[in-house]
Length: 75
Image (cartoon, rainbow, N blue to C red; front, side):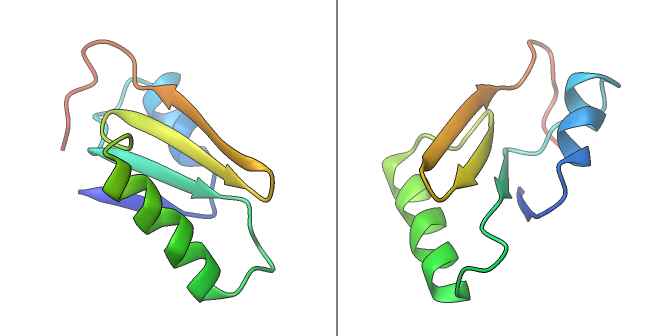
């Protein structure tokens, strides 16, 4: 499962509370962007194969990848 969200609390649940991680979390901060623009950015990340095992923050300036902690079992 890959989670696409506008809610950064999912990162807290995995990084600070140790809950199981999905394959990837794509946290978008593009609140006013058109859905098509968000979809293009997400698809580019998935096609590049960089999403798995990371929380990725998507902003207007680019993407920031943070690997999940060791032992974060995927749900």
